[in-house]
Image 1 (cartoon, rainbow, N blue to C red):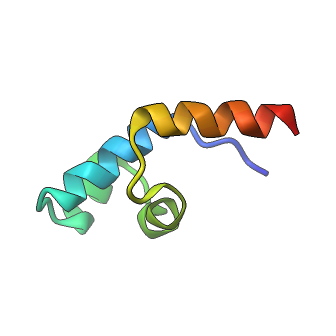
Image 2 (cartoon, helix red, strand yellow):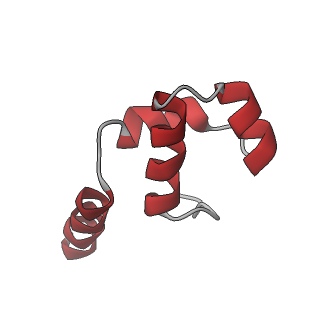
Length: 61
């Protein structure tokens, strides 16, 4: 699997910006990515601490 150039915490921040009302197309254009909805499916509703825990669990496997 290809490694994203954005950290999990950054991706969660992008999701929060969109939840706060920022237009998704503008956010994607400004930050330079096109995989927003894939990230929302994976990280939607998570906090940064949740992402850290997920990374730890994935490392154990």
